[in-house]
Figure (spheres, rainbow, N blue to C red):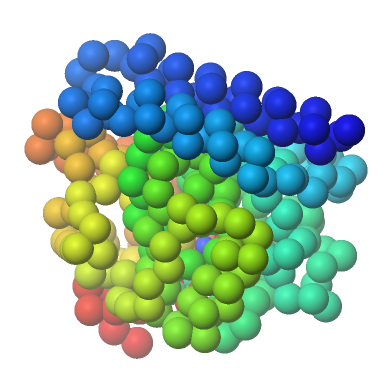
Length: 265
Ligand code: SAH
């Protein structure tokens, strides 16, 4: 009954996200978005039934205390955070800590980001359900799963083949069919799939890698932590008619982005 109720609610949310595309200011609408929106409505409708969300008291309190009360106001983002079972993305011994307000260690010495950061970055990308998203640093696959409920397709690049393989299997088993995982250096982006309407970088870089800037579509948004090894500023870049606007969103701390166009070791 609960699952049915949530599925109906998700259909409502997806329908709303799709309708919002029509409410966007005209300059934000590209011909491609106009064409895709009706098609996407049906895809989202189908997807809402494919995902049977595991919802627990812990997930709801995470939404309330860690997200809603701290400025995550986009309902579609909050719904995606409820729908994705974070406990299935952390190593088994840490499952009971999955809904804590912190990043947690995963395999290969990496981390799954704090829920607030995942929600904050997703909200900053202003996803409406139609986007092709590039996600750099698949890690556990958690952020990719969240964004897959908010966008049309997620192209996720991970440098560690072990992490990529684990995430790919997990995402497939959980039914996230619109996430595509690729092993490689994410500082190069994913040229074959570019351009992207949104780019999320989940590892810290000393600067914005040039290939990522080049793969941002018109009106595309990118969020990326930029700074030193220990401390970074989360910045949002928006490609407004070929001119990139940059905004500072706040201080963050991520693991390093290691690759040709970022840290080299
Ligand atoms: N989004 C992830 C957390 C990412 S942690 C989640 O939800 O679990 C950062 C990830 O970036 C790590 O897995 C690390 O291996 C990866 N990474 C670091 N440099 C990279 C690069 N150049 N290309 C792709 N992935 C990279």
